[in-house]
Length: 114
Image (cartoon, rainbow, N blue to C red):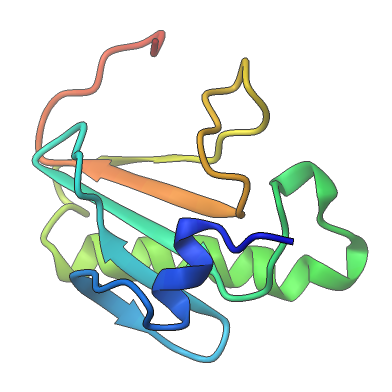
């Protein structure tokens, strides 16, 4: 199976601007940001998408969200607000089949998205 670009970043085969790194996830600044702050919090466990996670991944899923919130606070987004997005499948906007959370902020984000 071919590695995703995120797995190559996790394996340090491709450089990225790190925002966070721990035993469960890696966070990087998006190279094509959709907001002034756009960070991707990426699972180190190779799960293609959130709908393929299992009950055994509950701790990991919670960790991704708590890590995104901590990064948002560190980057000064907690007061003004931010958005967390998890895409699933083609119609959901998924472009890389590797579980990750988008952290977007530092501009007003309209609703509905897309």
